[in-house]
Image (cartoon, rainbow, N blue to C red):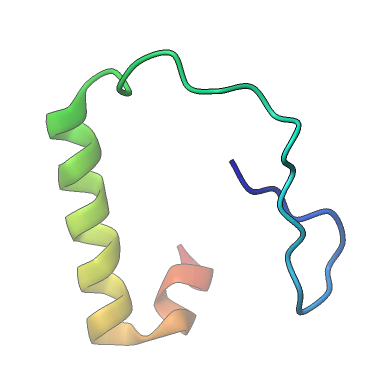
Length: 52
């Protein structure tokens, strides 16, 4: 798990975080959301995701 600690250009990874227990629930819906977000980014660029 990576968490953005401050609004800088570098991300510091938190190595003390808990380990995942299982796969996320609803993997089909998760995959669908990921495909839609990637399509928005491909078609509209980062501005499309920011507007969302």
